[in-house]
Structures are given as C-alpha cells and as structure tokens.
Length: 180
Image 1: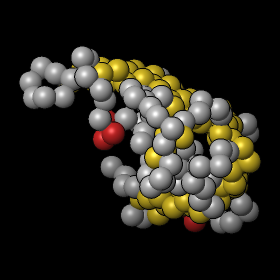
Image 2: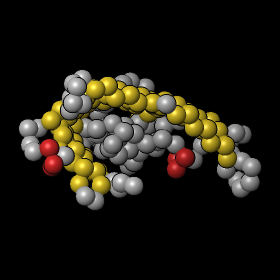
Image 3: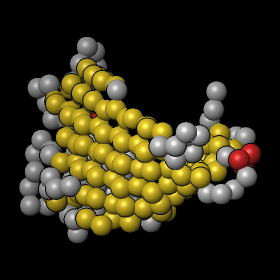
Image 4: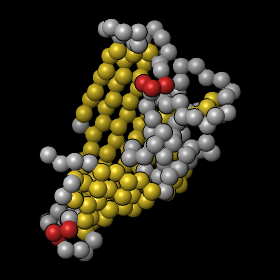
C-alpha cells in the first residue's frame, strides 16, 4: 500500500496538490509458489491551487498502467488533433494469475493472464472540442515475464474489450527493468 501527496507552490509559478493511493497483493496458490493470483489498484486526483492544472501535471493512463491501450490512450482527448490531455482524476485496477509454462526452472520464464480496468477524466475547462467521459475501460490479455540476467523482461498481449471511440488501443506491450 502506498500514499503519495505532492504539493507544488512553495516556489515557482505552478501550484497544485496531487494525491495518489494505491496498493497490490500477490497470493501464492500452490505450495511451490509457481501459481499466483494478484490484485492491484490505484486512484488519484490533482487539484490546481488558484490556477488551472497543466497538461504535463495530469495523469495519462495506458501502456503498463492499463494493458491493451497505448500510453495516454485512455482519458480526455482534443477532438480536432486527437492529442491526449490527461485527466485530473483517475483509477486503475487489475487482476492477474501467474503460472509456470513447463519450461526448465533455470529459464525463470512465467506466463500470466490478466484483466485491467481504468479511467481518466476531468479537466479544469472543457468545450465541444474535448472528448471526456468517466466510464470504465476494460482489457483482457495474456503475457509472460522472464527474469533475465539483465533484469525483468515483460511482454503482454492486451485486448481492449470496453473502450470509447476516441481511445487508442495497443495489442503488444513490452517493458523491461533492472535488478539490484
């Protein structure tokens, strides 16, 4: 579980309060811990202190935060240009089941199936050129992870099953990290 609060305005010309609350939990389903179930969720809000929020300070949802959608593929969008505007409010959540693929244990490659739900919405000012709805977007998919010698490598195939016409989807998501 994590709680994060950011305050801008003690110097500079940008003033806002941003709050985020999230958490995750992984439950082993087998004695050898090769089968797991996981859940994650996060909610957040940004509030301008005496001024409108900037696009760069708002939340962009998609990619690894909501598989099956492009990075910034969910949320308010400028109708003429199609550009994402970010949301002042958001939520993400997901369920995932991890399982062995039957490969030798030393390869350390695991499979998974998942479903994600997310939304981002609300701007300080809106007009007819802004597409913005607070409805859940849902994706389902499968993927695998490999704990490589260079760090974790993750490949997911996500399919948006509930989306808005202006959302941007993405079938393949690839990410990697480092280990300490």
